[in-house]
Image 1 (spheres, chains in turn brown, purple):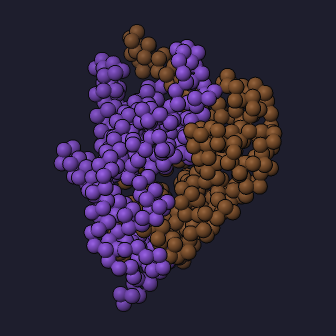
Image 2: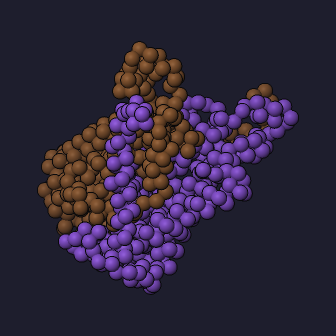
Image 3: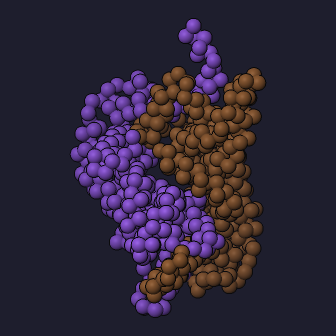
Length: 299
Length: 300
């Protein structure tokens, strides 16, 4: 810009930077505070006054968390469902997106509407529960994989990305005798890594964070993923409403009480659940921002 | 001949086949399952075989003495979230857009997306710890500076709405800026240059160029959020719901989960769910057509 800023505009710039720094710091601080608590001795933390640094540094909370068989099996389940679920979901979603790419496909419009309508109206959670019961998904590991398989939004994001791949590529492949199978797997998929990474991130994060399925549709304690276990453990304190009871009835954590407190252990658990997501998303930022833009502008 | 021409597309149909089956089973069968709301639930039968009960459960739900409380709580929470969340995201996008330093802008954006990627369980834990009456930083500062007793923010019904809105805005504000920033970046830079030539100052350019240019996106985002008015974000509310704040925290979704999944009043909860779905559908159609007529912006 060539023109000269007025004094007011300079003040705006400065206060804008300051405001955004404050905003960023307060966002980070909420996580940082939990991180600090998770490295602090549990009994000592009850005294308060810890803001920026652990007062009595300890690894005991993490040692106990990683030594707890419930927590570890919950993590294994979360990793398993995120891995298998994401792979299947990305593969099937992009297959559907590829099919809907072709404008000459008979019935294409009806199929799109058939899928789109489900985003406008649903039967609600009780009919869904009845369905799960009927087809045996309740208390089955498949309830974590199958119901979240497709999302109309993701189909559209991938299809829009596919639309930008030059048509001539698939045309010349077709000339050389390649069918849809080969064109999809050898041209479209390899050229769509950014959008596939974005969708994989969305789906994997949704799997990782989904506590609802485990809380409402599963009551087998061996089939509880980390997010649900965290919710159950935290619900025991009921936001500290009954602080007296919290140490009494947390049988999940009973073994732990010796060298840490349930509360400190929870903090370590929160950090362990959060870290994997936080390590992945910044690297995919460029892609998911594009993905959201494509999806929103096309919708 | 016709069949033969379809055969050409065999792989495409094969690709779509799982999606069609999926939506049939997990979306359309539950739509049929709504009939459960008009049937007498019997444990050992499928919905198809259960005897009809007429409008009994519908009447029971509509005449439930807390029916209007449910509706009011749901709409009020959604409305508050929209009232604060929408301008917050738009404002943050405008502020970010004024930042020249690329790495600073990018860093703030990365940080602002962070809460979007963690679950509500974690978000509510963060808020309950930071606001905790026992040794939480906010309460310690408050008692140190202003004296008095610590406030039990999370359990006190009078703080309920503030916490709901604050945590919701915190979780979503960064993410919601993406779309606004995308729309802003699509504005033709010549408009700004021409305006600067004519002596338009920073705020004037923001007001007369940026905002009008992204009006369609603002409209679309508003219509889309109308569809969620009846649900008010149930994960968050479910996690915050506790006996002390039921009067303000019981919304349609928590009622459905509580009555249906927890207590086993399946027919009643199904009717409540159907009510919620139908009203949402009506709202989104109405918002869409009003917006189309008033401003030419619409989803379809």
